[in-house]
Amino acid sequence: MSLLVQKYGGTSVGTVEKIQAVADKVAAVKRSGDDIVVVVSAMSGETNRLVALANEMQENPEPREMDVLLSTGEQVTIALLCMALKARGCDARSYTGTQVKILTDESHTKARIQSIDEHNIKTDLNSGCVVVVAGFQGADQHGSITTLGRGGSDTTAVALAAALKADECQIYTDVDGVYTTDPRVEPNACRLDKITFEEMLEMASLGSKVLQIRAVEFAGKYNVPLRVLHSFQEGPGTLITLDEESNTMEQPIVSGIAFNRDEAKVTVRGIPDTPGVASKILAPIGEANIEVDVIVQNTAADNTTDLTFTVNRGDMEKAESVLIEATKELGVQEIVTDDSIVKVSIVGVGMRSHAGVAATMFKTLADENINIQMITTSEIKISVIVEDRYLELAVRSLHEAFGLDKKD
Image (tube, one colour):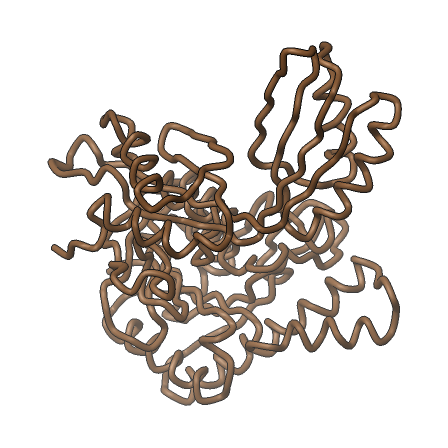
């Protein structure tokens, strides 16, 4: 007998019919002899509806009250799913995040989980009950309702699996696993049977939308086996687990190609080349809560330097205005912005033990006449900034170059 934690997202519980279909799947697992905890999101579209209502009431709603409002979406789903399970002869009990005692910090709308009291859940499981928990929410030390941010139900599921020492945490969604790249860009993309936490974390941070980054971090930290499955199609999905490179004879060099369209480039030209000047430019950007990604600095012969960095496309204009103010006394020549770029990355733990990966990537792009504007690397990833018009060509050519379209 296994203990499973299953999470169903908004599209999986978007209608009464879909909730009933989820109830069928959960009841079947219970009848097979396994214990099961189910984490659900709000029905698809419900969170957006609640946000719209809030905006009608107040221009900038207070975060605490937003959490009270948004947490009601999941409360509807847990009650309906329990009703559907009981109609199928399967005893079930629902819990909000507060009732479970998922303790978070006090950061409303983006809280982080600090601890979970699993006592009540274990008692219900021991009595043969299916436990249905509202994802995305908890409560702080003062008893105020908090939410974990968009996609927080994934994190709830992984945290519960860690607290309960579950055999597996299964994330049910509208895709049947993690692919070598987005099949909408590369039709020959293949579903991966396995991927490491490290690789999944890189792919999630680089643009893959399959899992929330915090959920992958949590799973890796507590070694929770994580599986991505399709809500309404049978299949093995993709297992995300610890690096087993030493036990794998044919570890692939590259596991996947990730990309991010939401990139913009900011260049500050003609900066005096003196110690601390980079800090004077980037510190105000950080203080404005603008996240910087790739950074490149070039020094010219005339004792000036150019500093180029990337930000989220939606932050480009804000970054430019911050820099105009911050660089007034530095005497820079100009500030140039460009939102016609994308980031394309190759990811794989096998890169650690294989030379020539970067050379293969760069030659592949050169053969397609794709100019690389910026480069950043880690042990298991190489990212390049290129013009956005070359995105699909870059992804497809790299996918083929590293043999990712070869099915076993």
